[in-house]
View 1: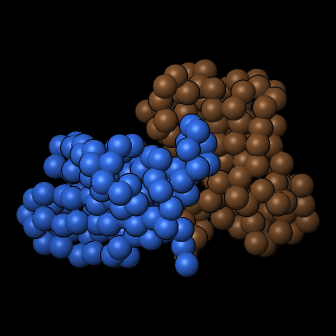
View 2 (view 1 turned 90 degrees about the vertical axis):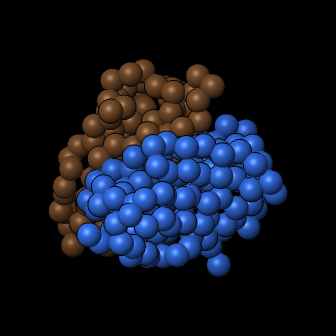
Length: 113
Length: 113
């Protein structure tokens, strides 16, 4: 157990509404990641963070923003949700102390109607 | 075509049989990660390979990275129902820390009694 929680675990929202997903870790890991998982596409990186207030874009960052104001929390925001953002979202962490393995949270299933 | 191809896409084996899953990259692999996912759950880290020819084992699962560092295989010996799930390979094809991983679409394994 890498001490990662995601909230909410399930959410249904309407097109055009803002949505924020939260990833929380308890072990002070430096690196945090947001992925989305879709059938036929596998996991794709949205954004990642390499420290407080330090973030970078991934493969599918359009329509998403992130924030990390403290080590333990990494927030993913959909400013105006679209049906194409219906997906399962996973957060992951990496300690960065000579370690390259990423450990994943339980996921958030988001449905945009 | 996908940067990272997994084969087969799905596999049904009888309990006790051996099986192999392959992960082939169109680019040089600086790190190759194997994960297991059960339906509706997060990813469980299995192993990471970095060096050409490297081989690692965990219980009855063995993974190897070929010498040219563009393909990895995951071999399960004497499969059990507990091995059932989706096996995903993730790859660092950029180098420099493994922050931007690419994932295959997964191999679904069913183990019949």
